[in-house]
Image (cartoon, rainbow, N blue to C red):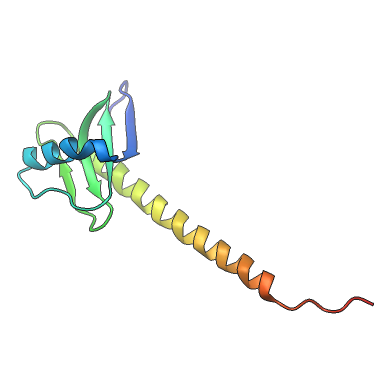
Length: 104
């Protein structure tokens, strides 16, 4: 893959709009419209994943297949963590609402 490079997967911020537009233009596709993840190699954005619809914009002049897989893996992890958090919260709320037995 990228043996001696620094790979970063991060959430896109408001100031990343130009980066996302640039990646979409390089990839000859429409701009990403939802919240996104960005994959960087040594600080250079190479691919992005729209968290809303799962679409990808990637630099066609760089090897990005593995980066896209990392983006998808991270997106699944975020989705699972959100599901776990909401499930955990609902369990705790359910326990808090249960009537307690009177103590003798």
